[in-house]
Image (tube, rainbow, N blue to C red; front, side, top):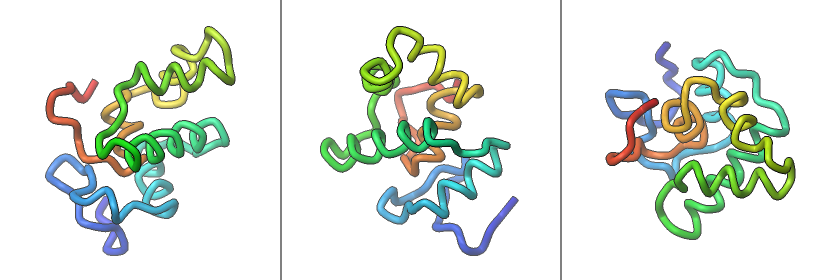
Length: 107
């Protein structure tokens, strides 16, 4: 699905410039992935965006899991992959408006 209102994406559907991301972009990407964003999804997305603002790189999944553990306890690892079942890079990073991390697989 191509949406003329979305910012420029690369051949794999990731934003070319994470600075063009906004909540509408997240909703559009989530819809493409057949995900309805809940408060838990938004918590993860906002954490990733905040981490990116501070470090100029998307956080590794272990940082997101550590963030979730502060709120959800030891089930956080399972929760991350329940929220984004087709993978941290493929879904989570894409919906949060990150460029595709080069060194990571898309799984």
